[in-house]
Image (cartoon, rainbow, N blue to C red; front, top):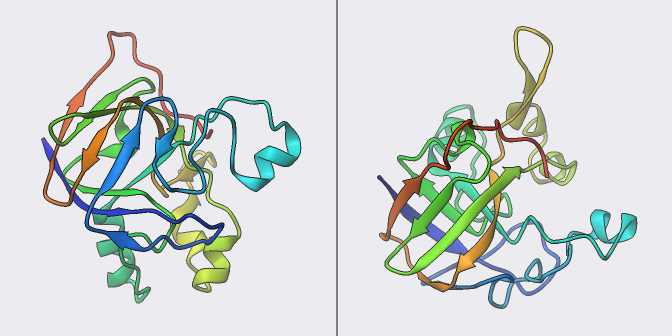
Length: 179
């Protein structure tokens, strides 16, 4: 079990999202009042490619442990500053398989759809940061560390301090890929 440490949303296309006292997740849409909420894609690059594609990036979750690590490396990064909606602690988000369900607080349930594919805006936010959230493993494969994306299955209000319960899908498990 983990915990929600912060929640964030922005109604405008901004890289960072202001931290809020609570966010409301709406089934099939995402974070109420967030620019990325919707049934179809809302991220500008994806809209340009095909605006009719389903929105698999309704809620962006990031682990607070990444913020801790980046701060230790000299990058001041706080919740919401990398565009995430829900910041967690105590859950290995990047190690979850596709289809994992996360219960956020007493009501909300999201399903993990894949990895966030970090964009150049991260580098514009803090010079040198992009190479800290995207790297290569010993075999040369790309390693993405900027959180996971999800869709809302069951709506509800999410607050900092709420529990995060992990429900793994039935096997076999599929590793997360960028969405």
